[in-house]
Amino acid sequence: MFALIYIPHFSLQAALRLEPELDHQAVALADSTGGKPIIVSVNDIAAQHGVLPDQTPIQAVARCDSLVIKNRSASLELSATEILLQTAYAFSPSIESTAPGVCTMELAGLGLQSEASAKAWAEKIIKAFAEFRLDCRIGFAPTPALALLGARSARPVNVFFEPDQFIPSLPIEALEPPVEIFEILALWGIRTAGRFLALGREAIAERLGVPGLELFDRLSPATVRPLNLVVPVAEFVERMDFEHEIETAEPLLFVLRRFTEQLAKRIGATQRVVGEMELKLALSNGGAYRHDFKIPQPTGRIETLFRTIQTHLETVRTDSPIVAVELRAAPAEIETTQLGFFEVTLKNPNLFGETLARLTALCGNDRVGTPVLLSTHRPDAFKMVAPHFSAAHPAGSTPDALPGPRLRRLRPPAPANIQFAEERPVSIQNSIFNGAIHRVRGPFLSSGDWWDNNRWSRREWDVETSDGSLLRIFQSGDGCFVEGVYD
Image (cartoon, rainbow, N blue to C red; front, side, top):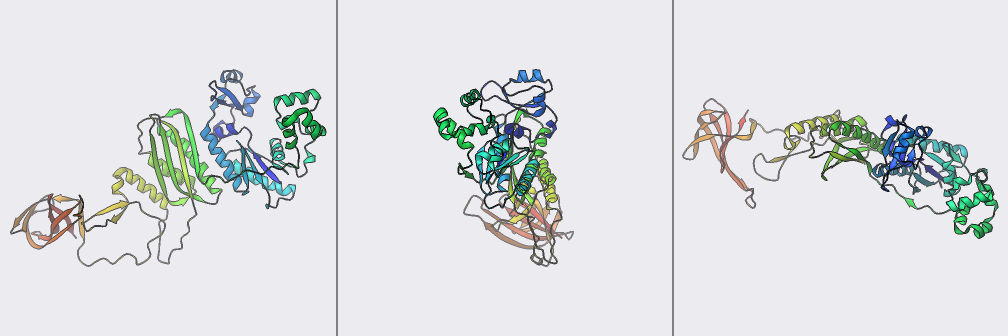
């Protein structure tokens, strides 16, 4: 037994999936790949106004002056195909990408033994596709070819466990025979599949040849072709090529809001959430912009994901207008962490991550994050890395602070004019203190990284000034500095 998912007017539905505001307008889809634009698909409202496929856009607008004409988009059709296969794969592990907008599923082992159970199962599939604004029809039959015929005539589900129930009355046009075969059958007065089958296999082979036999086998319940099974891609991507160049953030954010919603739903259908996102912008000058988003706490909340993108784009300036956009999302398992009795974690890591993104935009990438010591003895050598939000630090993991005053470092160190007597600092002049030095500890000599171009050496002292202040000063090849003040 087989089920077939059929998305009518696939190219048009793919083009309109992200534009719900056009649901109640007359819309036609134009294709200009052959050079001259031609209408290839229309919605019901446009058809009621007399707009038909194979018309030119000028002829179509003459029939309906309020007609909205959309250009066929390969990128949108690719995204819709990925949705079709990924959604179907959630209901059956054996699927075939039969044609654009058509997916065949083998039902072995799914336990769909009755018409009622098949229809209930199909309703779940239809509801899943409705989440992505795709209208589909489903046909059940003993062979893939018959399932396709059932799906094309479904409103929205056809279940034919017994092909004799519907084959005899099926219009011959539903088989989509070659034009020459259709004209011959019309001359013979054959209008239905039942009368066609009544001719017999041998008579059809003798009069119509191989094309006639292919048509006959399409109607035969005994002809079951093996499916060319596929596994959907594990990535989740939404793409769009803009018909007009984008120069401001508003239309771009409008599209990305729809992308985020679709990706969150697609990943949610697999019982996972969004862990990472990648944004790509194609520019009119041939350049590109790319940015990765690491979600602090993987989530399926659309507002949280979109706000992450919006916060970043507030600081982005491109060299030229945007002509295409792609948003890719990587799925992640829903995180659950068992904390200890005295452990705590961030109440909202994603909100905190958004705040960090804003601070990073204001202060710079090297000024916001978690400091990590570098593998060197050079004083105050560290780098800033993105913070981790997955779990709290175990209780007691932070080492106890050493006794004594704390050094508050100046970044960068403050230049100073230091007077020496017998290599011992005796006075200091700078913006922090001007006067004599009463007590000195040092010098403390240190050096390192002599094996490369980052070599360094310095002499440092801890001093007490005449007003009782405690300072750390040092001397290096760059001069004398105040490194910090002790509390």
